[in-house]
Length: 256
Image 1 (cartoon, rainbow, N blue to C red):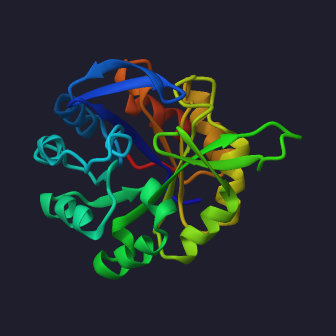
Image 2: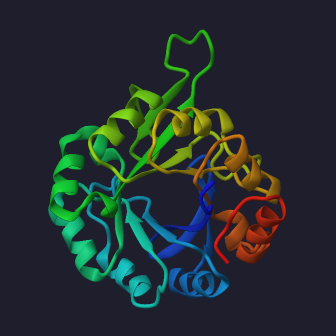
């Protein structure tokens, strides 16, 4: 097993880090620059910044928000939200961002994945996939891709989409369960494992972390290569060092 990454996520709205449940009922958490400095100091392996209302508001990522964080971050830094073109990606990479993450744009314009890989290299591109779980017997896919901050169903089966994303050249997948997001009841292990076993690129589990056991479960049962969390880190319920120590003691290799 390769070393597992611990990744805090900054969901940003109006220039502030926020956190909600199921992508709704957002509450203020902290300043993104303050958070970035703290997570770098605490030993996070990467940092993800998501401009969560950019796509819904039909605008590009707010570069001024990203630049403030980019100026202080000392670990690999990925940005998503509102990225819909090669030009949007270039603007972020020129700021010093290490990786860009596309979600709705990838579903709408799948050829953008290949164009980005050709332009910037596959290691600079993450494809984020948001999913929901539909009831058995509903006539819908059990695991379905949703877009526009989870507000719009696509009718696309999530494993099929993950395979396509890999074939088109993405270097990794950031997989978030809308149903589990912010609940602190654990990652969607069914969804995470289904995607992780279907592709050979790394899959980051996102949505639902509430206690240390959930991180372990995401890796062992969900087969995730990285675990992303927000609430538990932002509100001081779990520290990066605690997460790493917990996994290490249970035989999971982590970066120290």
